[in-house]
Length: 284
Image (cartoon, rainbow, N blue to C red; front, top):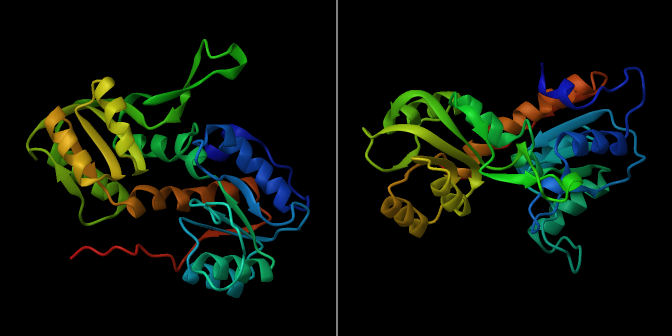
């Protein structure tokens, strides 16, 4: 079963709007899953606006904004929110203001699922876990079942994921599996490359806060995008290996996949992942 059909069926032959696409995304990655500090949902735009062209991206940059305008995009689904923090003013005198003004002037709506997409049933962390063939996968930080007043947890949703490899795998071999899955040339390691691992946690993006939950879950390694230097030392002292993929690599693959989900759910629309977005950090 494909990710799109897990959530909702969309009637063909109807005119789609910013609001209807937002409703689909809210069902796919419920905003209630987002972290308290996050800014998710429809951030810019008219819910009643008709949509024909949708672009996904990891982050709205000058390049992806130019692409959206040039290609007649009506709606951008960006993983990282824009705006992220409350604005006191909106002018072209700031980097964020220029991007917002450009897109608003071009009639481009902005939706961000961010940490809700990290944590949902078919979200980024679940896809990372599947990418390295983890079994018996569960959230590192499960979501409480609100309908049961917190007495239960939803074992399919929550922050991060942890699971078990079919057979012990050396840290270097697990890194190789990740490089192949994400099509990257290099990753960073904390730990002995020949160490055999069985229980592994994953948490996309900048996820140093998931080290302690990974330790509590009995994991021998944590796969993430990036952590601080001091978190590396903390992991080393705790005997937990780290594989640092880079923030971009740990999330961008799923943004491309989200375009496929939307294209399947809304076959009348033209949907694609940004063709001009690039990782600002280069390996040498």
